[in-house]
Image (cartoon, rainbow, N blue to C red; front, side):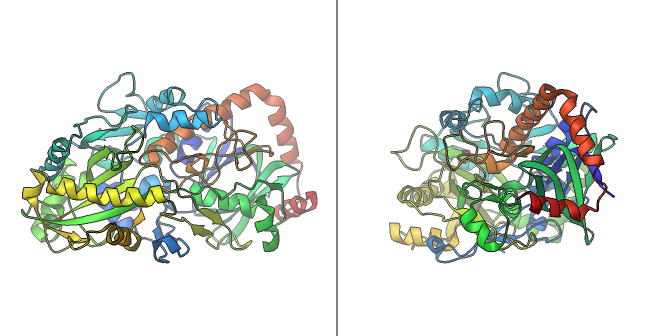
Length: 567
């Protein structure tokens, strides 16, 4: 049986849930959301600190590994990605950050009309329900909660005071476009529970008759008629199915899987795809290129007082207290997550006026993010460079849609990135040595004070650096004269019809901070573009497409054959 909808949204993550809600909101269009993972019913998704439990869960997490990176001592680095409704917003660290004003102004300067800070700000305000209250930069009527951490912690307060002693001001609000300062993060939580995009956007839309949600449905490729995206082929419960499209296919599969799907569908660099036996539909050399990520360096300290989350998690009484606080009051450490302390500042004095590093300060310690906590009182300073120069790539290895792509981050490939890494470690030590932090620091566990020279620090960074989960840029937005641009300023794939990319892939340059909220903003903007275009074309095009869809009575696999014949 042939099936047909107006819009297919591929990927039920941070962007996909937004698109599914907004496109089905007015009731005029039929929308199908395809999500490769299961529904978001696992309890650890909804408990904020629970991402330690989902970090390695193959049911909820794609669990990718990069190719060996020669800049990182040929290490393969673990890249978790959400595989459930809500996507990575269901398994991330819940940090609510937009980035710097200049990040978006730079996008516009690169030729992306309408993506400056002033143009994006209304969509940031639209998406949020911020407990700081309404104002010029904040909204309170949106679906996604921005919640201030309600309780203070002695270690975080000491970090803020130490930063003040180094000339870094305190900051209550990191989302005005100016981030410089130290303070507490806001989190995407609601009443002590995670507020993923599935919770914020999808749950209110579930009962709409024009919205269909398909879980455990992994997209395999986009099928074309000529240059028009005509259908999506996907596998669900062992069966390959095809869903025809009246209007548009919207890829929201993330910065790793959206370019993978484009390449599998014959959209990308012919020099790479043709030898793999993938028939070309349209050549766009930028698909999978321009890969960027934030690389974090985690310095671990032993704390002189038993005031850390390590101490609570090491005893049954501590665990019971945490559990009761959450169950009865929706409070305590379980309601907050791991990283509370925020710090944006300059590690290199010769950089621009924007902060060049970000700290995530956690009141616990473990050998890796999401790992088992240490058996001592510990805390973690995680520092990352905000705007790395290094660029990597993502490329399919074969025509098999179920084989993970090759991912090469190419971390620390430039002199600036290496110098910033070293400076970030040295700045961490200055913070730990400043009062009142120094009094609480019993000793540096990792890397250890014996690591002192630039060469030794850089080796530590190569040996221990890890993703902070922000891969971006692999289907970048750019003007027509940019040969590596994949989408235009309305996120339509260049040279094709009925196909857009809406996720972190489209970022031409990485934002200065966590990527989840910027992706939600991108999706809010994209939904407006799609609905504007639908209104501009009227009903005629949609009606023509419906005729095209419904007259095709042949089995679904024949559409794939037609796709090949068209080439």
